[in-house]
Image (cartoon, rainbow, N blue to C red; front, side, top):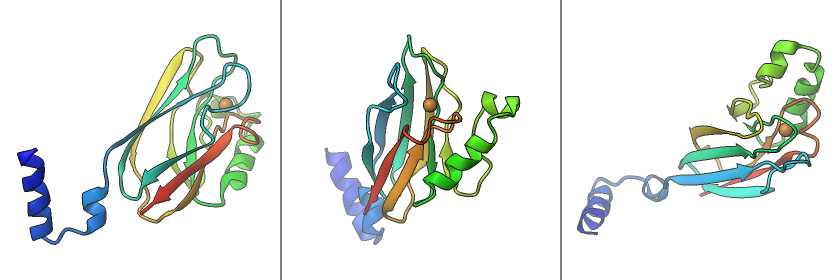
Length: 150
Ligand SMILES: [Cu+2]
């Protein structure tokens, strides 16, 4: 506790922006449904600039592989359509991350009974950042919103 108090004091003394002080490590786990194309959370919230550790858990007994792709605000459909257009490409199906500058963060494909972990720094700009599974066809219903708050 002494250590923490001192850190806060030093940060204040150095005039570190408030956002740098409150940005805290965030751990989030999304579990895929075994049958439906769905994550168990339709939204989660992180602080702008926070370090985020995101785990995608595709449970044993699930019938489909899944991934998680976080995109720029308003770009869910654009990125999802690229995934659908690539569904005939066997290489794409091994790691279905659409090639698009709208993709901010992406996991590898989690086969049933496995987890994929990604670590990233949350955007500094508050907003609603969609996430989706880009295994072709899933994204239309397998998606959600990462809310970024100041
Ligand atoms: Cu999926």
